[in-house]
Length: 116
Image 1 (spheres, rainbow, N blue to C red):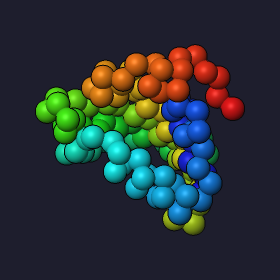
Image 2 (cartoon, one colour):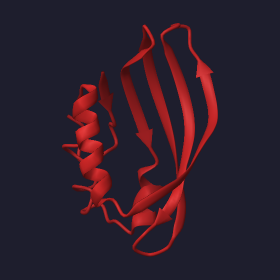
Image 3 (spheres, one colour):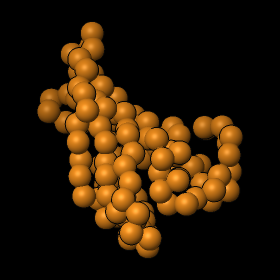
Image 4 (cartoon, one colour):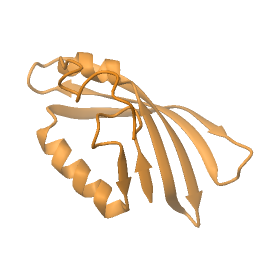
């Protein structure tokens, strides 16, 4: 599986393989001061390619350092083959996430940094 998050800070945009993603997610989650409390599917769109779907969803939670409740919308483009996710491209509402965490563009690795 390949997971790409093109709007993430540099160094966090591509993960090759399930284990690489899980290792990154575990390390990042330990440092991320958010308690996720709700996942809500907004829409699932079929495409002309039977292996590809587009999902819109919302994650909501509480920033544990401030008590602020916040949510962000995400869009995922997934390719599934033989019941396994082969490719996942996720687009995150970086502005909503940054605002909830009170992050600046510098905190995210610099504004306007082109994707590799």
